[in-house]
Image 1 (cartoon, rainbow, N blue to C red):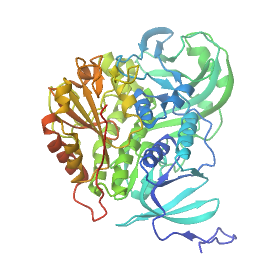
Image 2 (image 1 turned 90 degrees about the vertical axis):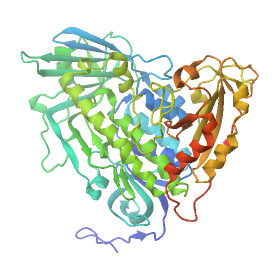
Image 3 (image 1 turned 60 degrees about the horizontal axis):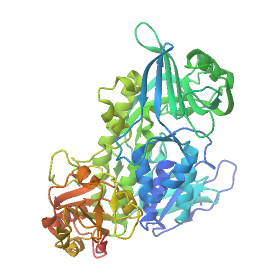
Image 4 (image 1 turned 180 degrees about the vertical axis):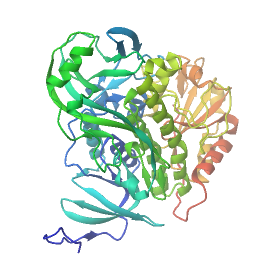
Length: 571
């Protein structure tokens, strides 16, 4: 029996002695749902619990980065997102009533997706429906009270509509936000600071005639260069609809809540009215506008913090539970989604006995440096403006798109091979267009070829089809079987001068060769999260694959270790 509230009746606690699920995910925001999606795609059971009884109707995180769209493409989810989102084409920057910069969010033509905007509640709806289609439904109104872990798993105490429950899971992921119960339960530090300013946030319609798909940043600065008034507008789906944020006037200040560990996110207190938002627009907007159709408004605060480590034992944190920072550049949610994808494929291998638990230490090694860089960059952009960034515009756009994230110094990156400026182990595996087959009457992108695959992919490139025929693809599979590493798919690409009827993907546009910079016949082992794990000469395929998987899987973890499942593709 569990002790009930004072004067109340004690409730029976349901206890499950064995593992009732492989992974317990706390939090059903975009990060938690992304973790669930990637785990379920890999046949790993999970439960997703969420304290809130329903999705919040607030357009909090709205920016969708091109890298996130690539991830959703690999999952087969991107079409649904594209149908719901609107393009984010740039930003108009005004200071003291004058336009000082116009930033166009342009990327190299080989990048398959641009920047987009989508309210967070829509992102959550799409991901939640996707996860439900894989057999896992969010358990709303269910709160994590506490947890303990031991050598074999995690015991979590939950409280939901059906009463208290004690759940046994192999692993626990805390995706429960800035005030994370999981982070506190692990005793992780959350160092950083908070901005003194408070902000208003509102979802409204403006009747101005600004260029479609452009956001606005309008500010007023004083003699010392500091900003004393600010308006930021991000386009949302719907004619003239924007999420607007601005400094809060003293009369609306909610103040720092007493006893709150982290001042970050929506606050209580007085809710701004449409007239409060209109007053700021009247002062700062580049064009006159009458606001209407306000769906909601709130006051919020911003902190910048990061944990000292992303996990401990069988328990991990991701997203806002691990790092919080200003919303500049829409980096937070997208960074959290990449956290989830990085962790999920590794957890899947370990849960299924195809890798040793040592693999999970690479999650912190790869993702915490990324979190540190994002926190530092967003703080700089929030205080100095993105237009004052020292990087050239192309580099700035690629970084904001999260296409420059790399793990070259991580524990899973193999030795470099080929030109120094070519994609190397730890880098994103670029997409490319212009792949043809003897059957299809249209060209394909590499993302089309890889869509839906959940395991590692061995990309084999040879300029001539005759060279490709000499490659023993089964040797790579046998090398993987020696250690165990999950699924290994083989995809062969041949040069544009190969005959059109070659039974492989033909690089008809030469884009694969241009982007991957192969050094003669070259192999690329692509990780399940779309990163290059190894790069090597094709003549050394078996040795390179064996070495990569040896480092990946670590020491054998008992007799339940399974073998690699190799699937060959002639195209």
